[in-house]
Length: 84
Image 1 (tube, helix red, strand yellow):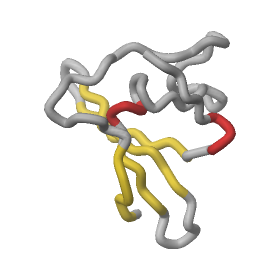
Image 2 (tube, one colour; image 1 turned 30 degrees about the vertical axis):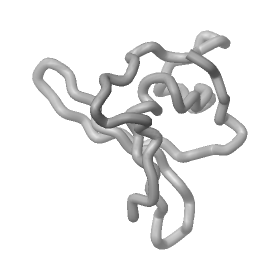
Image 3 (cartoon, one colour; image 1 turned 90 degrees about the horizontal axis):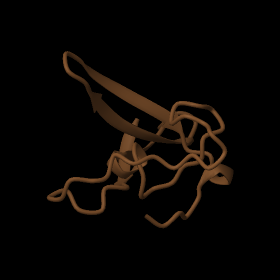
């Protein structure tokens, strides 16, 4: 994997934890919309697989006692330009 970009608008400001799910999905649902201004996508980097060329969104989720690295396939049909 090679990092090729970021969806982080300003690394010096705290991004919102609000999520965008107009159809009632969850952020980890396979059909959840990818809304770049909303959590978790507003914390993602964009990576490309050097073998297959597919793009992925990657971020680190931190809870009380854990740190989890997450990844999601970037599917263009799921991208939504939703305003905050």
